[in-house]
Length: 616
Figure 1 (cartoon, rainbow, N blue to C red):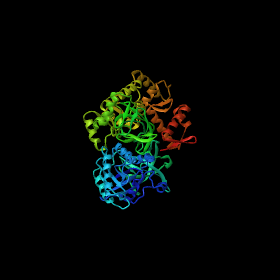
Figure 2 (figure 1 turned 120 degrees about the vertical axis):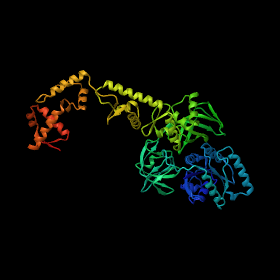
Figure 3 (figure 1 turned 90 degrees about the vertical axis):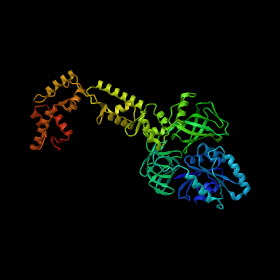
Figure 4 (figure 1 turned 180 degrees about the vertical axis):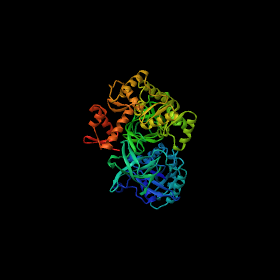
């Protein structure tokens, strides 16, 4: 499915054209209908002659509402640039065309509206004027179709032209990647609750899914989905989607928020970008205060010019954009820059890195790295992304390198085969050098731990994760790979080097033997606990001792014999008391209480008053 947007000067007939094509009035606000002027975004849809269904976004043309216009054109596939034949090119025509050009929208149709108000000679002059204005823009070769929404003239030709134009666009029905819905409306419907709308990019949204709203980080669940007022089970890339959300109030959601999967994306206040200044702007200075428009969001920012002191009219340059509020962005996202006062479009560009470090200006290595990110092959970009040696989730790595899902498998296979990348577990990547370093760090960490604590089974999994500063998902991927390579072993709670075996020293073994000999006395006694606590733990782990209480240990054979006596006594006499146990074994009351409480903890016995009975 494709989304088509309108553009053009105020009162040039955009909304009237949309209504004539679809039968839907996109001016939904009462004020819009009273003033006969589009103020906010309008939405409609239609089926083209070839059977393809498309969405239409109608944008305001008045200069005061350019910000609203920008919230609607970020996700469109093609544009209808509407120019009234009786007025020709006007100021907002030029600004909208500049925005289309900066957003790299290469597919469009110029609609010469209101042709019923002019004669043929005037119409030809307007056509020539339009061609001159389009020259050098992304719409330079766009077809020009004269229409009259009032009489219907040219509407059929416009639909056929649009059908042919969309045949040249790549399909957007794939469902891979992380779904991103740039929200342009949030409202409530009685009986349903919160509803948000937007154009879905990349992955798939499904009913029942848990989602996250960024930047605020609100969690919600998809209760229902609609497209063109029809219920759907899944929203796919390129669709206009209405999402009914449970667990969040519509007042907490604003235009500019992004709906995505939990943990999939991270808001940012710093962007590396390539910026182009439009031709009729004098210049943009370093540290200029501007407004950034990306997706459906707007954010104040300042520009750090990385390779010049000033960007003059029509030039391009590398910039770092410092935002005062967070936005959600991905590699390859297009944006617009405007001056806040007077409000005017001055530049636009493309995001090269949505999560960069701070850069110092006029550094050749920074410019070289940015150039590679912008112009390098997918494999080169991914190698550069992973060059710091840190493990990253696969989806995060590919998104940071700007690699499409369709080319990801081939790029990864090549880099792994050539020894540049290592796949960790099922969903993480690291450079070959990074894995060698991380593996060495982990081995050294465990070797040091084993040396300090030679009797422990291993180091706590969680402590290792924290020491390596890894997220739980990345740590699991690292652990899976290390276990597969065979140099690491693990149980439910600890990890250790495979060639490590906990073993007491000669002196420790002698002390343990003396302690165990003392425990073998009859009646059993509890000798003073002079052993190192870790030696006691090791002895218990290896089945040499049984811990009854903090200061009471028994030999396994003694523990079994006592347990059997308790069982037999309960079965023959109906129960056993502390006094009976004490008298039979000739031990102290404290000893007897501790052992019977141990059996309670083991779910062998249960206390009823002063008597123990069997649980099983």
